[in-house]
Length: 96
Length: 409
Image 1 (cartoon, one colour):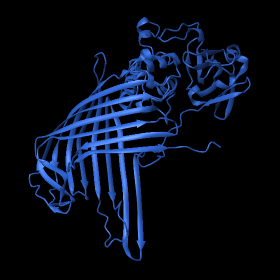
Image 2 (image 1 turned 30 degrees about the vertical axis):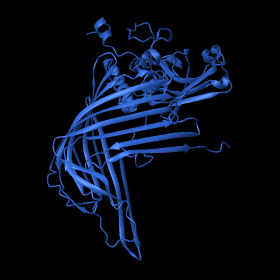
Image 3 (image 1 turned 90 degrees about the horizontal axis):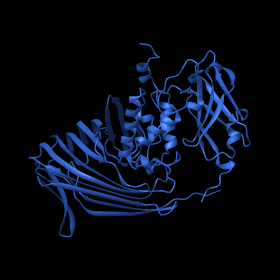
Image 4 (image 1 turned 180 degrees about the vertical axis):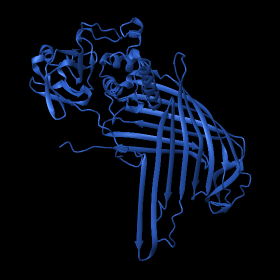
């Protein structure tokens, strides 16, 4: 199958842009509608404790898996005091 | 009211891993097909904090110098375009992939300098291959820990102290697996001792399996499943040893309210089963009859409630202004197990040990209030009993005040 075919494009690995990483980080928080700016702490989006952090990391990993990227959850920076920007930077740096 | 931005507020943070860039003006969230006419680009993303004093100066290629060093040769890079992306707090530098000859961008050492005063530089290095071990800050932080000492003196027999722990965690598919073990010998012993021994005072070992199960229901994150197929423990102090397996499932709803004050509630249920390995004939210097203490079989139900009030600008050291967490769990026993209470006999507190099947509740609550950056208040409450001996704690509260400060000069 040619890489230029529409079917090939559908399975193409998208470039891991800052916009895509931030979108993945935000949409996998418990309350993505609370997002206002990248400097915001994930705690304000509902990642308030260890249990929510665990789910946030797993959901980011699964979301990346759907677009054919892999990441070790230990390399995702998440938690109540972590900013959206720092979390998405850790995703961009460590997803392969 | 609008906040005033100044040059001092604007800081370049770390540079991120070089990536393939779509043409700068067409970067977007969704994948798209590239055409033959688009030259391949490389993008360098730099995390930024604050607002730039002048957007035009920031986006001017002439104000940037970029170089890549590979195999000790430094290559200056000519930029195509500089993008300022306030929505993601990034500056992205684009240049043609043809600028790189003979090396991959991820294998080079990168330096980018924004030359407008005050000049700022950021770097990126290829990920160094990590060894199997990294330094740990403390015993709690360590996965592998070993402490050993030998004490010799005139009026005491030699005293050996060994304190060790080993934790291994690994992931297999959607499962997280782990082994936790610890051993301690003479950790609390004081000289003089009349004999040297290296028999362990306490041993614990457990194999655990954990998995998160998603449940796509509004307001629910899913279930947190924890299995401990095998765990063993031994304590010389209480002469207790057992092998117990456990399974617990916790429902994880999304937290309520926010964005600054949150409430989270986690109900859980589980089962613990195993076998007691030791029936001591004396406990707390009294003769006891624990001949019916063999099989261990318990249902465990519990609930944890949390209230969080986030700090104005949460940091790792100052995340919450005020927290309350309270947990309650009850063990419903299917077989008799010991229960230790303190009775007042002739004005003396005496431990009494019984063997029965009544439910064993246990409750804990913690309140932490950081009413300033220098001072905080902690209140802790405990009630109930925990295995293996179920030593009963009757409404115990601890209040603590913390003052922490350092000289500002």
